[in-house]
Image 1 (cartoon, rainbow, N blue to C red):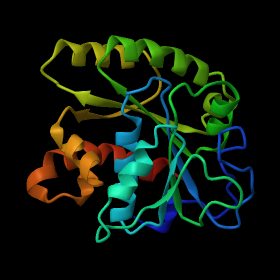
Image 2: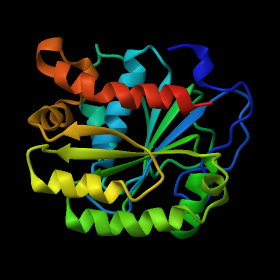
Image 3: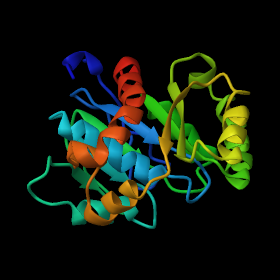
Image 4: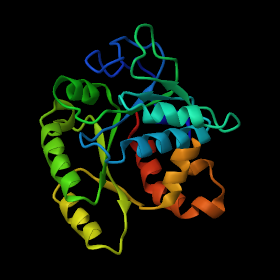
Length: 237
């Protein structure tokens, strides 16, 4: 991954309205990837930690910003073995001062993101990923979320790269078909499908991403992630 993935200009933090963020200009390039879905349990932390793990594995300087009161991403970082590619952490309660200077920031947002907090997240993001499992409840919540997103200027004008990621998918099930039918209604790209597998559960337990695993354990998942990593590389500016 080369330096063309990020633009050499001032980039602002996500916003003062989200707990722990400050509205400060940067004198260094930073790309912000926001992982958002207002529904709890939709796969945000799993997606955020693995995106951070991918960037770290590519020798990118990355910080994982945990805005979720449950602190799942922070706890994942605490379990991360010291010998693996480093990922800095910044917890929700961190206040004052500047974020550490990094090339990339991955933001794990809390459930219920809406209103001013959502507006600031959209305005400050370079890329937004919306994970969605094959669940009727999740699809209903995400439909409302996407309807609110299209009202934001950055989304209307195409300035924000927004991608949908189907997660915990079992392609053999009717639910997977229903999820694809649901997502086909939207103009936002369905970037990839990530399978339902214990590999992600084990990674969460051990502070790892799938990119830290040997080929014998993760090759199938690496293949499913290729469209997503290429999409991020294409759309980050």
